[in-house]
Image (cartoon, rainbow, N blue to C red; front, side):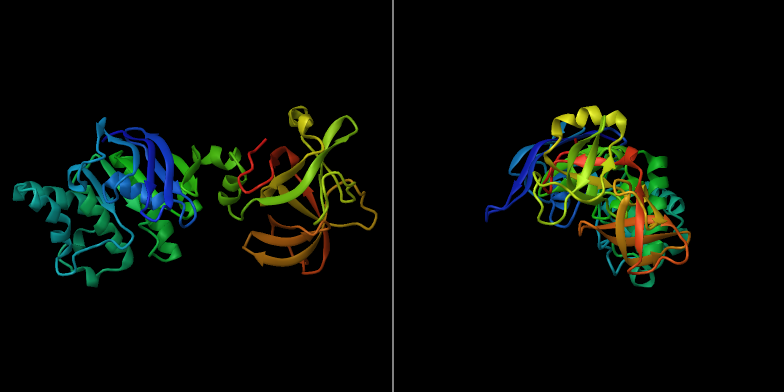
Length: 379
């Protein structure tokens, strides 16, 4: 096992495109770190630079305190599992797993011990004599992981290894990978675009966008305390709802006043107001009157039918657009009176139909407030 440190790592291509910008991260010995973000955010490029498959154009990469900027991939003592598994089609499973060890000149007895031990761990002992064409997608994935395990590297690198599997098999294999890491405790860097995969696998997750780390922390802290609006919207299913508006003084406290499309911050608002949690009101007073964005997770919106005489300053009024049943729960997509759309995940019930007028009661103790813009900071 080993520590992996990246300091100010950059990647700029000949056409001037900067894929990774000043990436700095320290990965502890035995830690499982997941790089997550949308397509083109720089996560796979970062992984390939750690592996030695991409040259870096700035910064320093260290593996186990050794600077490896100019060290060939084969000499970095890491093992990488690719999205397409890259198995040799003419070799059996056994030979695929043993190949790298044979190239090293390792004694046959030791190769056999390692291969059979890894196969037992991955429950593929009965597949050792098969060729890759006779394997399912999940079995190929296990062989690719086994080929990495037998090398006993300082670090594992995974580049979207589950993306070719169907949804049910992804969930099963994800659990197997997590259990495998708990047994081996080998330093692992894992790349995915799937935020659910990132949340369930990582000791820490690193959210990237436009080549920059937006936040690096434990999964629950990233979910509960997103650094900015991008992170808040990317992590969580369904995504966080964002409502444009401003803070106003309301009696002895502070309220959020949603603004209709086209309204400016200095215009009086006519939509219902939401009182901010008293514990946070004092820290938000300095932002009263400024345009801001309220962030609400779908589970913080609670559904009730709207009585005709509902008070104007209470919950959010909305009109149902669609209803998606999910078994015990359902996702209700609705349009607020301000014209903005939200999604609520609520307990399943009958009778909620499109075009129905409803009220969302909001749990403001879990509300977030952000500065405007795609990467607006959380206040």
